[in-house]
Structure formats: structure tokens, C-alpha cells
Image (cartoon, helix red, strand yellow):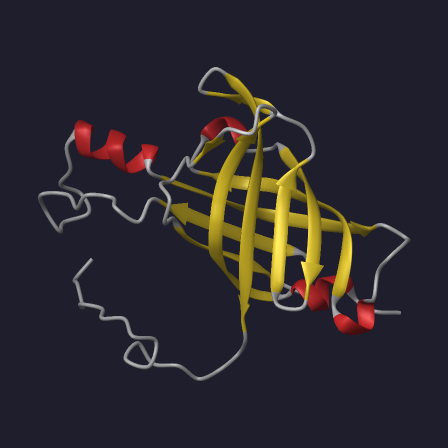
Length: 176
């Protein structure tokens, strides 16, 4: 038997995040170029981080020196949660050997930037095709006055030894 959690295990980078209304209109809660990562472990743990790629920096690099306005804007342009997950696949049209299947995934949130979600579960439709993972809500929910469904597309990052330079990113060392 194929272990679904082993197939999902790893780091997935966000490619798109949008909300769609029945009338076809689209909204981008974290901007049109959001950044994010979702990680799944074979043991059944998960963590997700998503942010607007154009978030402004705080005036200070000191984590403990921030204004209420900075905190408010930071929280509005970022969300994260972590916890346990369960996967259930649909019996038809799945090719587990090719890492292609559809089904449902439930995220059981043990921590969350949004405190009201702690102790809650999110049910998502799941479609996996190779290194591409699509997650979407099973039903619409209110967003800016409309009932909308959420759609996220992730691309798997495979285990490679990669330096920040090779990843074409620059990081600065801070004391925190």
C-alpha cells in the first residue's frame, strides 16, 4: 500500500493564491504575487506560511520595537498555522505510483496567527499531479461581501543541498 503522507512529505512553494466568486470575479487576498510555503511530514504534521510579497518593513530591525500600526499591517498581510493533517483519497481516477490523486485533506490547527482558528480544522479538496499540489475550499465563505472559494497552487521543492546563493536569495544576519 502506498503511504499518502510519504508522497505529500516535504516543502511546497506557493505559486498562486486566489479567491473566486460564483460570478467569476477573482480576488487576491495576499496580492497577485504572494509568497508562501507549506510543509508536510510523513508523521502527520504540517505548517503553512503565506504573505503578501510587498509587505513594508518596520522602522526598526529590533523584533520588540514596533508600533501598533506596523503590527496591524503585518498581521493583515500574513497568515500562518500549523498542526496535524489527515488525507483521504477518492477511490476513482488515482495513480498513486505516478503521485497523481485527488481527495480531501484536513488541517487540524494547533497554532495559528489568527487565534480563533486554534483548535479548529480546515477541510480542503486536494489534487496532486506529480510536483503540483492544488488545494481548494469545499464550500464558499464570505470575503469582501461575496461568497468565494479559495484556491492555492503549490510546487514541490525536492531535497537538494542548496545554499542561499544557489537559491538566488540574499540573507542578512541579525542579532535577535
